[in-house]
Image 1 (spheres, rainbow, N blue to C red):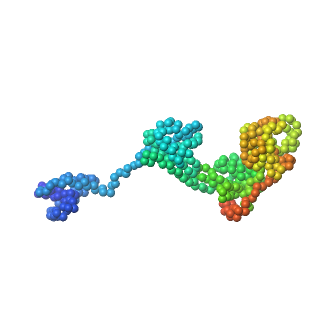
Image 2 (image 1 turned 60 degrees about the horizontal axis):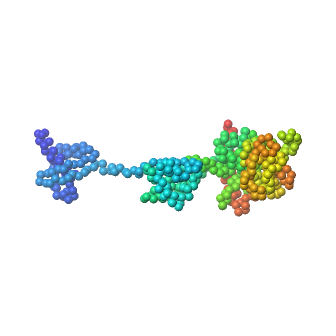
Image 3 (image 1 turned 90 degrees about the vertical axis):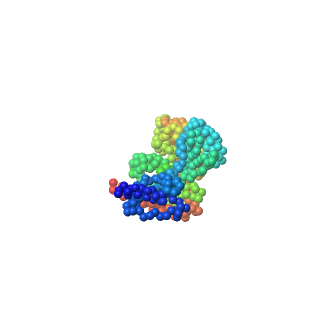
Length: 456
């Protein structure tokens, strides 16, 4: 009887598939439920359905006395979504601007559409940033063959320009690139020079130059520093998108020099200008800096009984000589007015500035004068006024610097310099409120460093 059961089972399987897959709501009620199948037939149907592949299209089934109907497309993995349409991928080109480059030249060089460039140059918000390019600038351009899709240019550290295609035209977008400011503390101990100690402490050149600038009114970093001098600095580090960009401003610093301690704390005023003050509110800035040139070494100190190297006679040397390469910028020691600009006997090319309080400063053996420091013009402290040379009676390039009060020479390294104005009453309370937490932060770091050095 096996052949009989199989012959009976196959039509029943076809009927079950037809009723479960091919019926529509309109015919569901019209088809009577099938008669109970003999034992074993239902198991055959269930087993057959379980063995179907993931996607099955049922073949048309025609029963006696009925018309053929198309079978339904059945997908057993109903949760599977159709594939997502990916955005088109364009070629990306990074262009570095060289001297003499224009956008027109760069577009031609890279076979980009000049009509697209003309459209972008007509955008009022974008045109100023496209017409003026500087050597070293970078442009990132997405393109499809010669058609420009987008153009991106960083304008500065915190902003960028993006131009992108939109329905046959271009749209300008200004992008903010916020910075994250983190604080970092560092310590250095001088063994040979400030710069070598900073390098060993991992302090960037920019930060150590700023440190020297802050204390330039009190410390001559060639003649005043001693082996074992310590300094501590709390400064900003700039990050963008998690990437370190560089160091920011110094927040506070301390210099322990030959038994004296000098502290400086930054304060930012409402107009955005900042300056450094002592913890009690006195300006760290003085009316004059100790050294008017970024020096490499001192070749001759203040010595009234010094023998002249060329004339071989005893001649008073009432100043300081700063040996430096020819062309090194010479800076005004303080605010003043140019009262002499020319040649002066053995001094060679010389400039003299008149300051307040009957104080004058002299700069000699110059190679050239700065074109902005003209006779009768006012200059400000730190402004470049001339360049180091060896004019006059000089054996090598250097700056001869003199400081005079009422016409009398004074040692510029040791003379007591007039102070700048203290912090104004308008900001005094606000400044004093910020001092304590900053000094506490610096003190905590000092304690950790002292403990670490004790363990070494």
